[in-house]
View 1: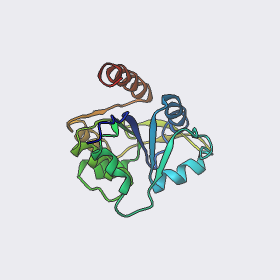
View 2 (view 1 turned 90 degrees about the vertical axis):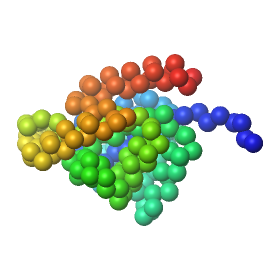
View 3 (view 1 turned 45 degrees about the vertical axis):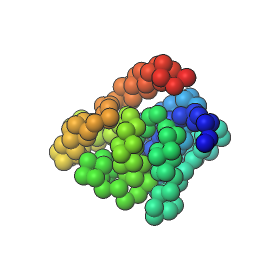
View 4 (view 1 turned 135 degrees about the vertical axis):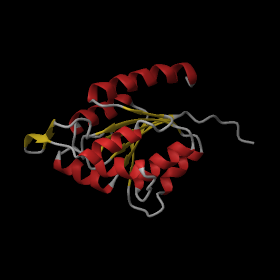
Length: 185
């Protein structure tokens, strides 16, 4: 029997949302022990925001390039203590809320839930009116009622903390780090 203990890591999913994208890449790089899962849409956003070369070389990157999302198996092997989904597009939020797991991002969320891995979820549509940085500058965004309703539904999921701002995301990550130091390290 193999008694080698796995050092648990953070799992982070990027989707097609550019909301706080630059700040998110900086935050991911600052955490350290992270496996980064990048949806096909997130690959496009990385290029648009000129961030594809800005991710630390210490971070293992998994891309959405297989139908079965083989990398989700790491959740069943206990590799992760926390999943961060963020920033997440309204498309990803809707799929997660309705249990659709047809791509890397939604498969990761589904498998994390099945394995009882804590999730910090940062949706891009958090208020009726938002300002966000697009590649061409600041833009006004007006999320639809259905997008805001889906965020409310997501808040009811077990083992999932939905954060409504980038500052709340940072605070929840710091809180989780403290919790993990007590539990795992």
